[in-house]
Length: 264
Image (tube, rainbow, N blue to C red; front, side, top):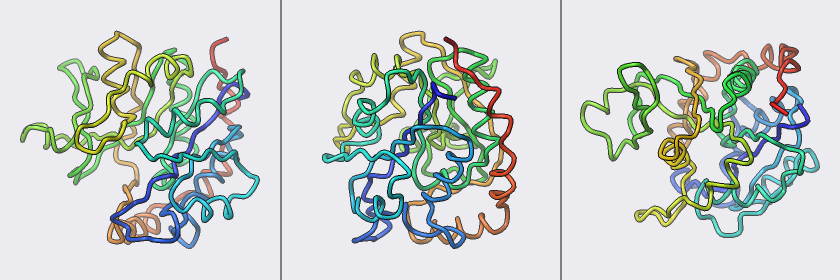
């Protein structure tokens, strides 16, 4: 596992959460701070180093995590791709692959999901491997577009989707595995959004497809998951957590991860 690192994104302001003094990843889910659930999982999977990108209300995150992780300060918050770019320079030279997660919704992932993503990435030897899941109500989320042979074509944001595409239930929750060499080559080619003036990590999928780079997905199906951007969504996440959580069992059941070894 010494060639795999992880970047956890925890810099955003989360405007719709109306939290002025603490970052939303420090809010509790099932009685424990969301980002702690993510860090616990990663430590039990023995993925190291864990790099956490902080920005808004960073002290609330750094005080909570202490010396368990490496912190990177995203001083200008210019989107998820920019956050990864900030973290990239802190990766040890021997790291060949990097897992990228959001610091809030990743609290739902089980060890088995991450292990399977790693295995697909290794087996297919891809530049980009990412998780997709299915939601009964995917409104507001990027849809996965596939051809007649179920091959990935694109990720279409909700606002850009046609009425037919909006019916698609398969979405991108933002759980990626990248080759570091791919990130170093293509991150700088992402264009800034004209709407928000930010650089989005999802654009790397389009760039990879346009350059005939190898992309693969792990189809997670209808696993418990909830994007958390508002107080209402946090309440829904609490309900999902208590209905479906198997986190403690997942943390104990991680021995399979030792089978993963990136290509040399």
